[in-house]
Image (cartoon, rainbow, N blue to C red; front, side):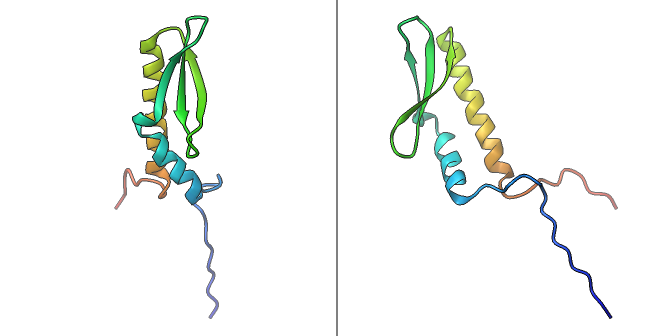
Length: 94
């Protein structure tokens, strides 16, 4: 008797490694973000990387727009962390 065994990943995309997951956990903390005002009056959002360097991300015309951009980025990375363990089962059939 012959058995066939195949292993398939749930995604063709490369799976995140531990360093990436550590970065995502770091970036979802709002205290690792800041907003700076530029000389032209725009507001720039920045996050602190794992080496304590500030990395610029977006520029917005208003402070509220900049804070909304930070909140959206945090939600984006929270979703990535949530799916790092594999897909969610949303419905099963009997």
